[in-house]
Length: 332
Image (cartoon, rainbow, N blue to C red; front, side, top):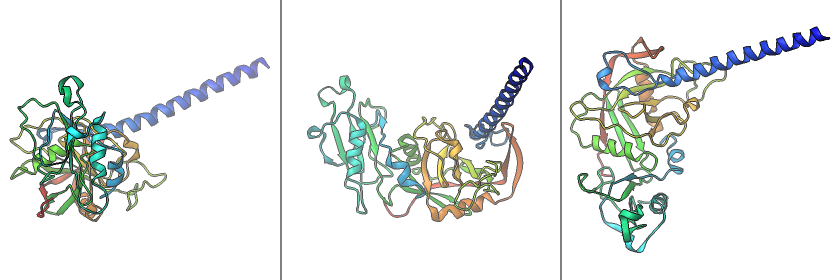
């Protein structure tokens, strides 16, 4: 009996060791796949890169739970509700009040908000919530940056608003911006819209869905999570214009059509599949409109060459695809 007891202990230890090794291996695979999407500067294009890896697509899902603004920013514009008569406790409440005026199919009655939330600095203006209507929501009227600002401000885009596009030789990729979830990211995109060029902006990596995801972006049971990783990756940094790192913002699950930063930018990617395994790792600032995903799929099928980034095999475009960030011809 004593011998059998000893054998059982040994088998238990062996079983635990095997379980531990399997768990560590699984964790390593997840870690490596996530490490393939890391910040890159445009100067690294010719050298070694790190990788991402391992609608209105989802627009309502991404925006429904967010209501964020930017501190030390004051948006100007005509007021639809005066803050002197409308006071709240938190910036999120001010944002929600504007959002409530921008629902349904009609035009938004409010598309921007301004809140004074620092009790000491705001003094008797603490709690003021100003609801405003910008004449141009893709070029909001704001106070000059060099002036000292105690306000927090944000934008709200209604249905069919806040849509910009990436112009490429293979077609235009229209996507809706999410200012309530990623206000710093959206502010950067609106600054790009003012430039006459976007020299240096391009897609440089392209990987299709392979046999791991179906046409709707759903992962096929039993298949690998990559490579290929079902994405097109590029940079949104224009040459000659210093890039300011963007803080990490809302990071929901990556869905087919998600437009997200890698780290703090300027590297970004458009996902061709649902990547629940990348949950809360990347700031999502927009989503490609469903009808334009065919353009992303087309780019993903362009000729590539194999490379190794962060010990992961990736597919790099033989000929990078230049892009420009543009707004729709009609005023928004």
